[in-house]
Amino acid sequence: MNQPKPEDQPRYPFQSAPDIDFWPVTHQVLSVEIRAKTIAVLWDDNQKSCFHPLWLREQCPCPDCHHPVTRESIMDLLRLPEDLYAQDVSLDDAGYLIVTWSNDAHTSRYHPGWLRANSYDDWARKPTQRNRITWGEALDLTVFDGKKTLEDDGELYDWLSYLELHGLALVSNVPTSKGTVQELAERIGVIRSSNFGAVFDVMSKPEADSNAYLTIGLPLHMDLPTRECPPGLQFLHCLKNEAEGGESQFVDTFEVARALKVEAPEIYKIITTVDFPFRNRAVDSDYRWQGPLIQLDAAGNPVETRINTFLPTPILNMNNKELESVLKAKYHLFKMVNESRFLIQFKMQSGDMVVFDNRRVLHARSEFFPQTGERHLQGCYMDRDELYSCLRVLERHQRERGMAPAI
Image 1 (cartoon, rainbow, N blue to C red):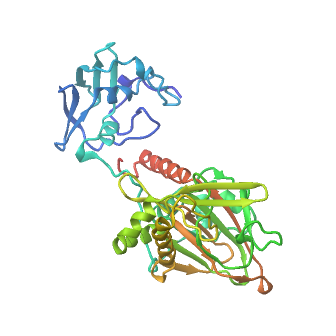
Image 2 (image 1 turned 180 degrees about the vertical axis):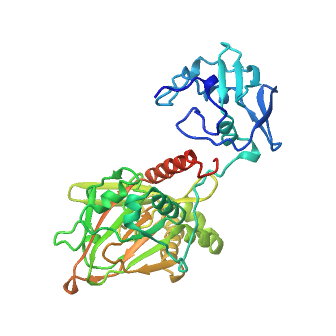
Image 3 (image 1 turned 45 degrees about the horizontal axis):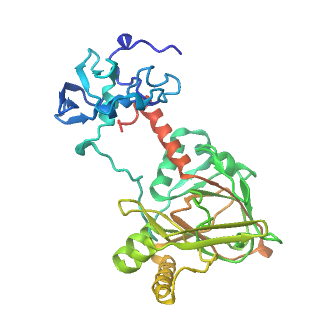
């Protein structure tokens, strides 16, 4: 589709930017000036944004700098001088910021909605951590409708937003045909294969290569802690659950981490700083990794956990004195995640699908008895990136329709 020239575009709240998005104009630019080499913007609510010249030049949305179809940069950043500065700044009749640059007299035109949303002054900074609500035994789990989720983007957005916040979401009324778990997962993004396949069947098997394929109860755990980057999401779709037993249990380790930090700070420090080994061996595979049981980000917030009690791996790089405190901390954490104050439990019914953040929410299963009925679940994995990407695209569509505020 041919794009109208900037001078032909009306003053309208959605205009092109250096990305494929829509940026509502929530505030107008009152004035612009060059101040101490920065480009200073005064908004109609009296807030001020000061943009670094190299930062702003790199984001020039013109077709010579960003490809008009891909919106990826085609400008060689290394050709810009480090002492680049704005030679002239002004506002055009549509409220856009116009900047002429010092090195080549190139002129850039910036949309006010994009400028406001991407301001990085102290007053404008946004939290870098994804939204979340930690929970324990009192969680009243919202149930979403599977058929609506498959068909309606609004229902899909509500479901995924809940999943992002809580790390756990339950969907009912999902068709019980095999492969539906993949169909629903691919509403979000690309599923992730593992040595168990793209889609795996959770049921009793005579030649099991995992405890999941036995009838015994499974303790609280995450899947694939032996991988450099374990799957972010796990989908489990209940096709049949007629056997006695087989209740599902879930624990939010971020809530456990919050409590552990308060109740036992010395153990919390060990759990978040010491690397623990993980290893999973089979006839034709041998996966290994090591890392803290609770991984923190730069701000000290939990971002993932690696807890799995049925893959014990010897710690080999410590003496007995060091092992004493490390093993004590490990067992304290394992005991804590099993406390009832953190646990929710329910039995999945035919047509239910549970989705959870595998690097945040531990899952378990009570023993079931196949002689009393069939129990058959199908599952698959997906990276967190797919969830976040899908949410951003849905939010972009909402902004396009004027349904959501600027971000």
